[in-house]
Image (cartoon, rainbow over all chains, first blue to last red; front, side, top):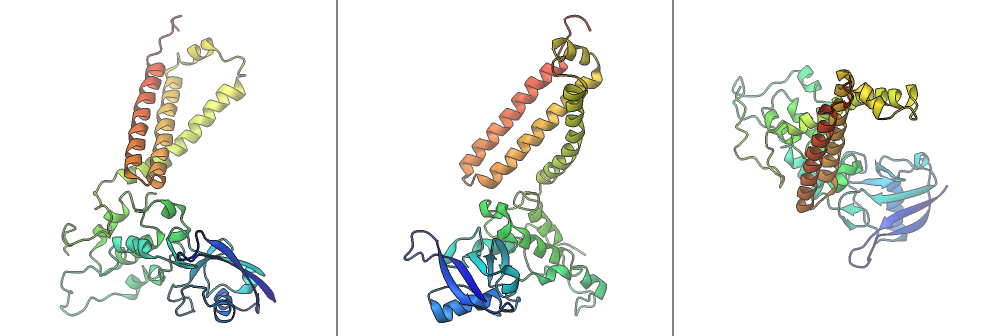
Length: 200
Length: 136
């Protein structure tokens, strides 16, 4: 099938403003949107810039806006988005080039919730901090965040409020607050309870 | 087990240090509770003033008669206070989100507090101090 791919491109060294570039690509319905981007970069226009690393939904590099919705390009199949595909950089972060954005403001929100185990007290047996399967299961869901910024950059508050921590930071705070080995809940809850926290 | 001292060696990635204040929590709770209460108060108000009574019948005497009953004064005053604070607190949250210059946020917040104080004062004087000239 022929797919029309429209990509919002921007090269700060050449362009005054972002513009839509159009590419006609032959694709299989089972191709991923990332395959289309690769095809364009490798065969049509090598100047197209985007991030990808693992290409299998683990590394969180290739979050983009596909037909208006934040998605991972490596997980979205052509058959699910149709024969006309618009791809933009995720919103609310400065564009470095084409689909590549500066992720630092996103990681600043993540760092604010102290995303590391805080356990200064010695382990009960002096050797290790044991955890039962039930205790581990309690925060299992929030260990799966890959920090792709798709959730945070879909939030209109994050687009305008530069101190709001964003949903990804809240999820990662949960991952430590509900960890039975962690002793830093009060620090994290203070951040979430502040003006930049969960009450937006 | 001891929790580490939250004051030692903690960085907030360029953000203002949390103040340990529960103000935003109470603000959030207030918006939910006042929203539900306003739902009842405003719909009741609309029912009485615009459905059960025609607007042609509503005049000074109608309000005078209604405010002779303390229940309706408390109803109207509660509606005024909750609607003002609910609405202006919403504006405060929006100004925090959308005004990116600190100076603009400070000016907006001052205006919001002044407006809240002024309208609560004027409204409260009107509703609570009303004395019927006909003695009703």
